[in-house]
Structures are given as structure tokens and as C-alpha cells.
Image 1: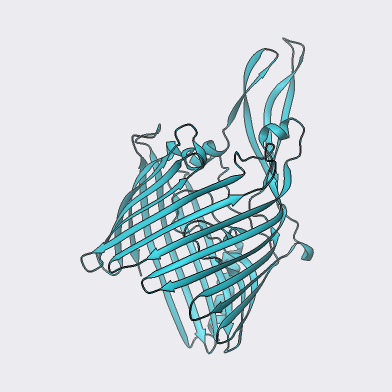
Image 2 (image 1 turned 135 degrees about the vertical axis):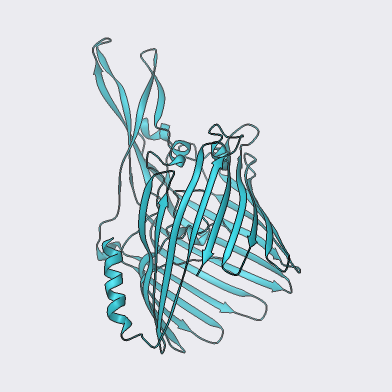
Amino acid sequence: MKKMLSAAISLILISGVFAQDYKFSGNISSMWGIYIPTSEKSGELSIGDTDLTASIELYKGNGTVFAQGKVEYDAVMKKFTPELCEAYFDYTSSFWGIRIGSQKIVWGKADEIDITNSVFPSDSTSLFLDDDTLAVNAARLSFTGSIFTVDTYWVPLFRGNKLPFDDDNPLRDALIPKTAKISTAGNELIIPVGIGQMNKPECRIQNGEYGIKASTYLPLCDISVYGFYGFDKTPILNYEMQTSFNNLIGMKVPSGISITGEYKRMTMIGFDAAFPMGSTVLRIENACFPQRYLQSSTEAILSGGKNSIRKNQFMGLAGIDWMPSSWTLTAQYFYDVVPGEISKLDRTHTFMHGGTVSISRTFLQETLEFSFGGVIAFNDFDSAINLEAKYSATDQLKISAGSYNFLPGPTKDGTYGKFKDLCTAFIKVQYDF
């Protein structure tokens, strides 16, 4: 709230200078959903989001001031949240530009899969967000030529992913159950699992983050290279067994598990390329994370091991987009590789890979759209499927309905199947102004 008030005051003071031109826009949306019969929670409310988003842009010459805020009520978690989404000053000339403030940064050419973009924070509190990108407080210095652009970034204040660890968040149980079963002294105990502090890096100059993106635009392709040095946006978790003395058996027994976290340094080097060919575009994207801190398994930590192990990690993707007439078709293959021994890591495969497919078509002069989106993990053959129909009643009023489905593999739940109890049917209404 303090940030929102500060930004509002700044905009009022600056608006006198930027009174030459302005643009005000926004939307009101309401999305409601229930768990479908395949879920154990069938019929219960799964989504209950109503929000108001407003943006203002003030222009004068080569300068722009932009601010966007949102007020949201979540009926599932019974939470009212005001949020400053972005607030920055931007100046652009023919050769150079600078942007300072809270801004969203998106890297890469992947669709719905983060490769190079994983170095920036996202909102992980829901599976049903249209946009999960979070803004960071940063300064961007850009240089532009006829066939190239170079963006350099300094992020002095760390911001991590928004985590779904609140007790009333439906994702909490799917990721970290509230209780655990353990065997001790010949008995099986059910003990509570509590989540404590996620320790963020101290606010110091030496804890800043740095990034660079260099792009070139050639007749046959667009190519970008990336470099980043900063902190991982997901914390490394540490598990600590708590004990208490049991008078009946005369010894200490486990009484709970406490989970805390810390954010580790990371480096990323990557590139992407796009090759347009008429109505078709081919895309590739790859990233290397040298000696990244990777999460150790719960068993390894509770047995006295370290909470993380440093390993090289490689991630990549190849995709194709085809847009004939009223159709849009996208297909991607992605992979995630950690070479070497992984028995003590919180992952089951050295080589993890999968694919995505997205198909949509418009009708009635592009006022009606049907879409299908799906992702499958080839290791366990679990998948997620999104079906949606969207109707534009007017240029401003849009109504949509659909479902989110999470399917486990034949033998394991896998990456997406662990959300099988969160399958949802939804309806959404949005009015733009």
C-alpha cells in the first residue's frame, strides 16, 4: 500500500510536466469456477476472482510515465488485495533509451514454458492466471541500431516468485501436505508440517542482479542472446524434524516438520532464434545454468544431508507456429537436463522432456473463438489440458467459459497429475474501458 501511495503521489507531481498527452485504460473482470466431477472436491468453489485493473500513460516528447494498479477480491481465499502492478518512467531517443521503476520483463520466445524467462519472478499462487508475470524494481538502459537492440538491466531490489504456501491456498496440499506419516519405535505417527520464513537476500548493493539481452534482426531470422547474474526466484527449502519427549515410551519422538527456505545465487546464459517463413514461424530457445543450486530431496535432508547440490542444468525448446486464415496452431518440444548423479535431488529423471500443443480458430467475423491447449510430460505421461470458448459481445465486453484438466500418468502422478484434484470448469466476464 505504501508503494501504491508513493507512486500515486509521484504521478500527480509529474502529471503537470506530462500534461501534453495521456491515455487511461483498464478492465473489470470476474472469473468463477467449480471443481468438476473428476475431482475429490467436486462441486466446491475453485475460482472466485473479481478485479479492477487501471492503467495511465502520460506522454511528452520522448518521455513516458506509466502506472498500472489492480484491486482484487479472491472469494476462495477470502482475501482483498490492492496491488501496484507497474510504475516506471521511460525515455527513448533514436539511439538510446532508459526505463526506471517497477516494470515487467519478459525474455525468450517460448509459449507458456519459461526457459530464459525463468530468471524473472512469476505468480505461482494459482494455476488459472492469464498473466503470471511480476514486475521488478529495475533500471533498463537500451541502445538501438538499424538491425540490433541491446538492453542492459540492473535490479537492485530482489523479488522472488509469489509462493502458494498460505494454508488456505488449494495448491498448498498438492505441493506440500499439511501432515506427514512417519514410523518410529514400531508405531506410525501423523505429524504436522509447518512452513516458516523464506529468507530473502539482504538489501545491499552487492546483492543486486544484472542482465543483458542483445538482439539482431536479419532478413532470414531474429536472434537474441541473454546473460543473467542474480538469484533464483524459487527458494531452496530446508526440512527440520522437531521432537518432543514421550512419557509413555520414555524417549523423544518426532512431533513435526518445520520448513524454511533461502534464495541462492544463479547464473544463466541463453539464446533464442525465430525463423519466419510466410504463415509459419520456427522457434528455438536454449539456456545453460552453470553450477545451479538444485533442491535436495526431503529424505536426503532429513537424513542429515545438504538442502541443495550444485549441478549444471540445461533447458531448451523448439517450436513451430502456423497461422493459416482463421486458424492458429502452435507445437513445442521442451527439455530439462541435469547430467550426472541425481539420487539425492528432488527430481526423478536426469532427462525430463515434454511437448505442448495449442490450437484455436475464430468464427463469426472473429467474434467467437474456440481454443485447445495441452501439455504432456513424456517421462510419466501426465498432462494438463485447457479448453475454452470466448465470445466478444462488443469490442469491450468479452465472455468466456472452459475447463482446466490435470491428468496423472499410468503409474505416477507426475508434474501435472499431482494437481488432479484441482480440475475446474469456469466462466469469465471482462469489460474493457
